[in-house]
Length: 185
Image 1 (cartoon, rainbow, N blue to C red):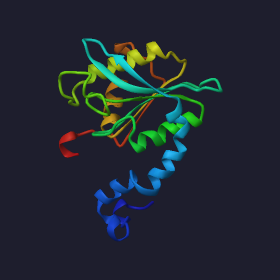
Image 2: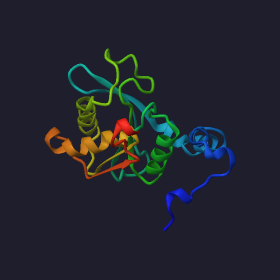
Image 3: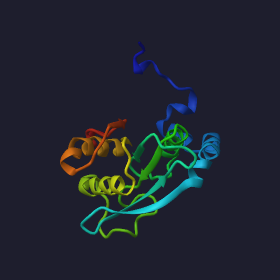
Image 4: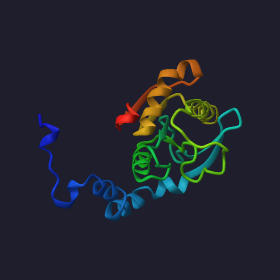
């Protein structure tokens, strides 16, 4: 097993900012746009009522030519959106595998700034729980899956912990690189 300190990217790739930029640009982005064309074609923008006058924006992708294997709700990371390359990449893979996909924007992310008066902060768990209840009510499936990336991973873990008491049914939850201690992240 290799120690993470043994990893030394070549030249300019040693800068983590360069790695982040390249992950969302150039050839990778062109390849992703081609691979996610079908997902983009079937995506439907949805405004969710999250309760207490709060609304969140998302994009729902329903299987057209086959029976869905279940619903996967994806939550982006800090400063991301439902159209971030990593979310489109994951959503496209799940869609091609036969799942319906809902890509949720957190408050003030994507093109949702006009929906709510207050500003986003990571303590607004209740409105994301409300969004999940709305998603499950509007798009019922036998199999419900939740996945989040970075800050979205943090939200996913907190949602999973409160799902039962909040009336949300989850068969599985995954958090990819979740922010666990925001002060140290």
